[in-house]
Length: 150
Image (cartoon, rainbow, N blue to C red; front, side):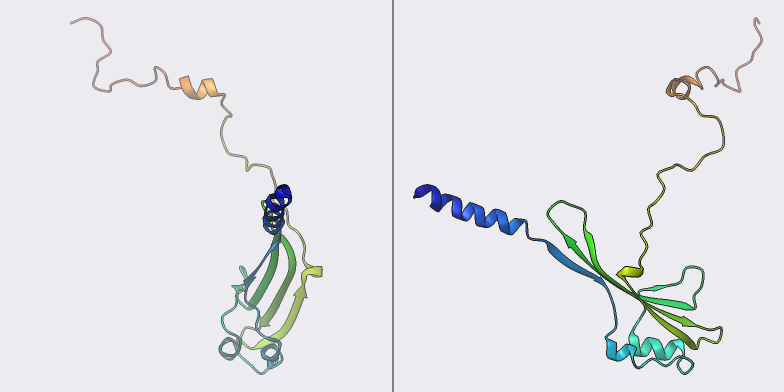
């Protein structure tokens, strides 16, 4: 009986520690705000006033705004797993007028894996010994004369 009393709280605590933690990151405007957008009729200022600041602006093209939200699930010490993601892309023309609205979900997302390779550098590749002793004897005092004798 004593074993059951001791094991029951331990079992309850250990099972609660394994419960996943869900976190939401980013900002996505409500659907009723998105439905108020009218391509061809609103400029960047009006869109920002209605929707708020975008999560991101295009790196190479400042005429694309992104509103991004992501939900992740983290179980104990494992890497967080993305369970939901939404990206709203607003595209403006050269006169800053809204031209198109595109909404992407997790099913359109593409996983981008960084390359493990290193960027090559210019010069020779040196061993550790060459690096340690490469300059041994190279330095001399410029004020010291190299002649022998008086």
